[in-house]
Image (cartoon, rainbow, N blue to C red; front, side, top):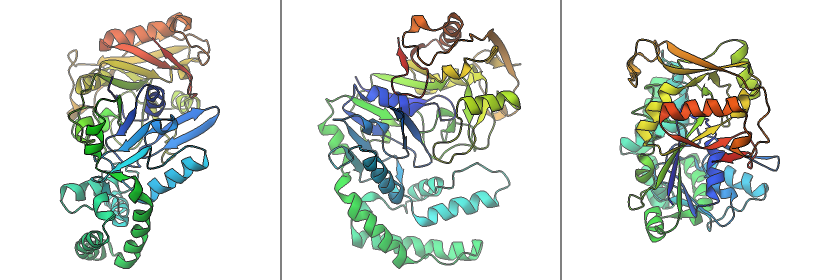
Length: 417
């Protein structure tokens, strides 16, 4: 069975843990978009593993992980991540990690541009300043530098010179920054090339050759950070929805059997942009503290709010979701009352408009809290009745089955129905 896993909210839904869980039944795990602005976290026997570029399926022995062409790669960060995992005893070698030759590279000027642009804007986006957006811009401006260029010294030198010829005057005249040194960048990235070359491959050929194996496609961020379908302009710079799994991996010949959407039992968001169910005050602090709502990549505090079923309906539609994985339901254990947004006031049922999402007023319903710890529950029938009622409301509203329920950060803390 071939599966795509995507986030249904604004990212940080707990996809890393779900991917790790599903990876045990897959042969090949493919990351198909995003960059090191994303972070997936998995906890095994009390040891925390944080991923930025490598699929979290790397923790499962005997699996092959692929970084697809839709991913933008900061080679320094990738090498650091490989070294970090090796120090933790995880095998990372050319045998079990493949990097698409067509992936684009984040260059030093991308990071600088990211920070400069965010600093100059009236309307802040909330970027991580990792150079993700400017790298994607160069990709579509047809001046990007790819992995296949990096491992060819002559080609890399030519493309770097060509880029600096354009960018150095821009940075100097507009931002007053000193010129980037061709020599320094070339020497630095040449060392990265030596390290990464054994991992590089024609991912299309590799995936096609192995098309009869079981695939798990891993998305980063969440549906409403999609460059087209998210809360534009407060979005990321790639397509985060399930439809990009084939394009971002170069594997349209692989049949997708199921699409699993991951959602928290409440809602969070990092950065700027509309957030209809956002909370302020003590409840916001409760969710942040209890749910450990700080970014895996940036450690930024996440904005927290009640579950928004209106955006989840839209996300299920956009991703053609078959099943839902609900995470962090244990964070609700101590609440006397649990609210959830069933719709927006004044909107017809199942209507959706991003044009006024910053102005909508959520229509809430509520249930009583269950006041029972759920982190050790492993069977659905053992969940508190009110917790099952909450899940039933979600299923009825979305017309999708909640197949997986995460009740804690540990790897084994998952209920499968």
